Structures are given as structure tokens and as C-alpha cells.
Image 1 (cartoon, rainbow, N blue to C red):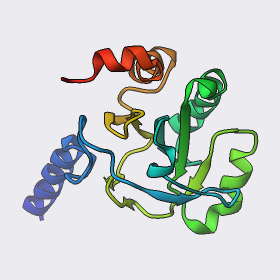
Image 2: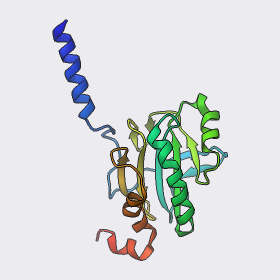
Image 3: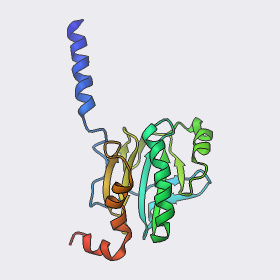
Image 4: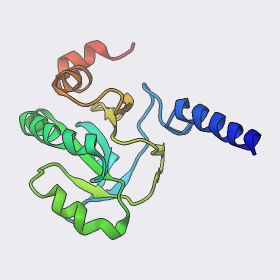
Length: 177
């Protein structure tokens, strides 16, 4: 019995330090996998229809305290930079039975909110950790991936990872040649 307990503890320890995103998660510098989601207000959004915009794809849940802290900051950033070509898509990872809870929580946010209800998101792998964000440039290329709770969203991180892609002249300078 002691041996089994030690094996389980070792497994738990190793699993807690393993990367918490799927090997299938997208890589920086590659085209962002296309996605299609239905927003809470009934619109269908897909990556192709958002070409020309900088996208912050944000996975979250109402039961996630860091997510609840980040969303108001994302709303403020969206309000300030929407006219610059920013699109934030907040995808709730709740169970579909919690749709009313998600709707209530998302009331007041002006960026699109969707609910996928599954941990596996086509092209983005299994979402193991929340919050989790990806930044996609105007050309549909991933510029920041697996941005998670270890590095929370705050004013500094938004300025570092998102703001440069909103400036068209700067984007041309920082693209790899």
C-alpha cells in the first residue's frame, strides 16, 4: 500500500509541473488555427472574418477567480483600442448548462463572449488552465500563445503583448523578414 501511495504522489508531483497545454496547442509565428464560435448574442464569429484586426482570444470561466479579475481590465483595454482594430473574443469554458450564469456574468462587457462547453478547442488543443489567451496579428499569425495565469493580464502585459500589433507601422517593423 505504501508503494502505491508513493507512486501516486510521484505522479501527482510530476503532473503538477508538466506543461498544462496540449502538444497540439498552436505555436508563435504560425498561422492561427481558424475557429468558429457562436456568441451569446447569436452572432457567428470566425477567424477569417476578423482578418485585418488584432485579436485577443481569451479562454475563461465564471468559477475562475483570476478570470473574473482580468475581464474588467480587458473591457477597459477593448474600449480604449477597439477603434485601433482590436477585437477581444472571450470564450467561456463553462458547461453548456451554465449558459444563464455566463450570460449574467458577461452582461456589460462590449466585446464578444461565447461559450464552447468543451475542454478541447479545435486547433488550440485541450485547454487545461484558465485564464488562457492568444494574440493574433492583423494577418492571422499567432504572436503570443499560452499566455496564462502564471503571467496574468495587466496593463503592462497588454502594452507588451497586444499594443505593438495595433500600430500598423510598428507591426511592419517587428514582423520577421
